[in-house]
Image 1 (cartoon, rainbow, N blue to C red):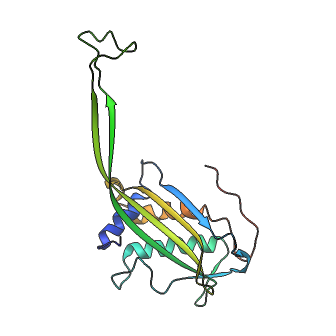
Image 2 (image 1 turned 30 degrees about the vertical axis):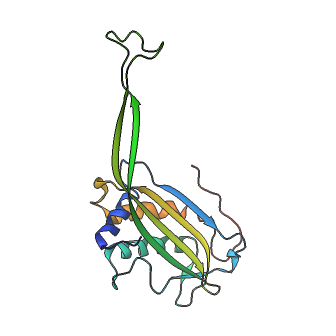
Image 3 (image 1 turned 90 degrees about the vertical axis):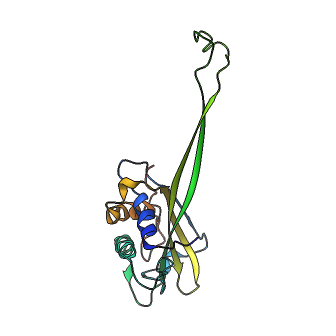
Length: 194
């Protein structure tokens, strides 16, 4: 599902690295047949999936800056005729979580607790929340083949909306920590400690 407003983009990006909240779940995968030693340059795909409105939002600008820093930190040079094309996509989804917990039953005095069950019941709590996903793709420009993808998935929190740029600057490095390659080499960097 594509987002229908730039505000949802901001919400999704902000949730991905909110202060005081659990870190997003990061996943990555790569094409085992890709020769990463052949890649020295990079550029963005001509029309990013996140630019559906025909202009570049502030969020897209923040993502481009953060991705550029990560690519350059790995020795890649930006080019108009790149070896690797970069694309990113943001998605949001409404989720419902329910949790049932036993109530404190057990008769008038509660003496049954721990030995055998009384006539207590269960209390169910239902929570609705928005989950956001940021996906970053690296594509072999000549073959038009996806060679690496990194994804961050997390819960959107209201408290993170005040600093969208900061959230982007925190989550993009988390995604790229899973990218173990540097420009022009086949050697792999170690995976980050988890």
